[in-house]
Amino acid sequence: GAGVSQSPRYKVAKRGQDVALRCDPISGHVSLFWYQQALGQGPEFLTYFQNEAQLDKSGLPSDRFFAERPEGSVSTLKIQRTQQEDSAVYLCASSPGGSMNTEAFFGQGTRLTVV
Amino acid sequence: QQQVKQSPQSLIVQKGGISIINCAYENTAFDYFPWYQQFPGKGPALLIAIRPDVSEKKEGRFTISFNKSAKQFSLHIMDSQPGDSATYFCAASMMNSGYSTLTFGKGTMLLVSP
Image 1 (cartoon, chains in turn orange, purple):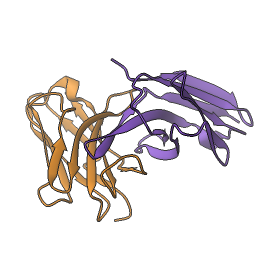
Image 2 (cartoon, helix red, strand yellow; image 1 turned 180 degrees about the vertical axis):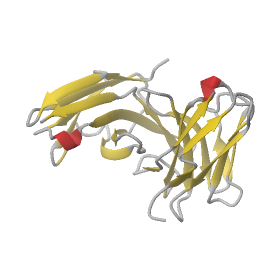
Image 3 (cartoon, chains in turn purple, blue; image 1 turned 120 degrees about the horizontal axis):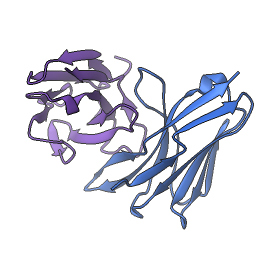
Image 4 (cartoon, helix red, strand yellow; image 1 turned 135 degrees about the vertical axis):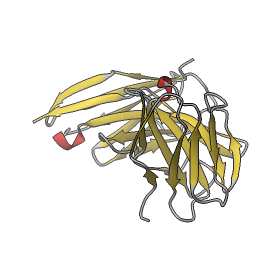
């Protein structure tokens, strides 16, 4: 595709439900990043993949959050036993190299609402 | 600890005016300072970026001014247009173990009135 694609665009989950958010990066991009953007705030880093390797997961807020990129392309962010504080827009970004110091391309995000 | 502080939170500018958004950072290891523009329902998009070895960078109507000693940088939008109405985020990053991630400010909601 022409850009980073995320699905679903919107997700409503009942508290305690598990959710899976998908990211299709730009083809050939080595790096993939997940960010969390709370309402009215800037994006906050969650985790980073270089190809299939998860090199940094320091931003994941709890062990309920899990991300994978098994074949070095599509990535899934999974949140178990969702809580209301998990409500946010989850953004995926990809870049050709190992850095965001060149242009990193963001998807439109998945808006998660936990009720 | 907020590593990148952005102000103002919101800004209203008349068409044709100059929009100015300011950011300050704390970590002197940061070596890349981009500005992102975000429209409602869209992801952030890179607008312009600067490295600390220059004090100013201009691209069209957009200029970044950078003050390394003060650890501050700002975005100036000249001849602001209604289509510039969006949320703007400053960010900073540094290379760490061969990769870098972005630390964002909280954003400035800009409204350019016709």
